[in-house]
Length: 471
Ligand code: HEM
Image (cartoon, rainbow, N blue to C red; front, top):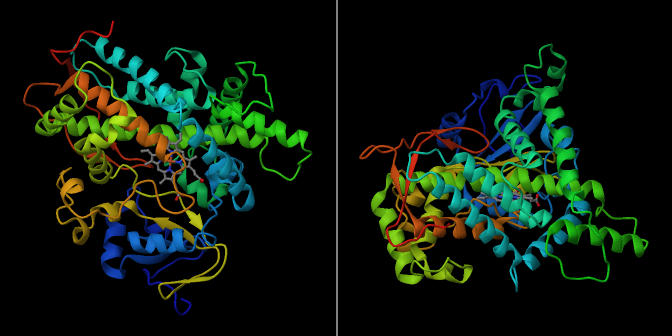
């Protein structure tokens, strides 16, 4: 090891580095290494150094204080082969800065004033509540409905329209999205050993993933074009992201600007990134919230009382109600923390040699934030194993976010928070969620993946007695 490098386990093998040591769910091994080497240690992924960060302060040192050095994404099988290094998620350098500034400003505008974003979310929430009602209090697994709802909210914000949950394009979008999320974990070895794609039988799902990505592009392209859009470069008022983006492309053309990343290829991939980054994360959060509501009936009742006192049961919750629902806000933060929904943040790469808190981090090092430890550290949280929303009410503010930190944090954070607030407050206001069978709690066990999932569970959604049917 070069002098000054962070500590790390021995026995890195030629070609594979430490990869051979990592099991499918590596979290307990990473925790073991954290205890042995500290909150920051280094492994080798093949020949590439990989820095694991288990501490919020160190993460800020890297991603906030040294943003320019760690701004770029690592080029991986997913970002390079599947996403073609296009779109806001995969781009690096000036092209990323240009996409980010444009997307950030557009999302901000959609969420301000008339608040088109909140309107689109509320429209979808109405459909969601109606679908819950159709279950008539019978035990139901709501996961697919929640995922379709969240995906359709993105359609509303991006394309300016929602789709019927039975629409063929919408169903294909959803199925490819779910496949890629579920299966990419299995094809991970391909990330480091691309020659595996030549093995017969497509065991690592290389060809299937490439095929699904091609279908995904074609579906999104159809959705982008479907409205037969007209672009008016003088019109500054937009009701969706695609319209804003197409207008920006046109403006650049009219002005003769060719040195730009604002083009159709990046539009397609950026829209795709929205679905990849926004569907699974947000829907899993709602699913975990539902699980905790059912498991902790006393907390559910307190949340209902808070809504009852501050909003009543006659009108739908609005974004302006959010500051008043302190327990609901705390419940959401505790769900993020306790569920460990996103074990890792997507990786970045060091663009030059840099010294962080006395450690030398060589150019080309991959940075892997381990959110699991940040949310489960006993020294920070005291009793991390307990689900206690009040910790976000009573105690000194904790440094923690599941949206990552710095200028390249989640660009959809405000939208996600809006969705989660409107979905949850509306659900709790209207229904009481009960376990499948009286007195039988669902399991809190989870399965590891890009995002963690709870074990499948059914719930009875019983209309609160003071609510009228939505029909
Ligand atoms: C609970 C919900 C969500 C969580 C926990 C979450 C978390 C994250 C995290 C950890 C990152 C990586 C940031 C980094 O590299 O440091 C990210 C990036 C991103 N997220 Fe989210 N996200 C959520 C919802 C959304 C939504 C609703 C959208 C949009 C519809 C979205 C769009 C994106 C995009 C486009 C990026 C890439 C940003 C860039 O590279 O500049 N996310 N998200």
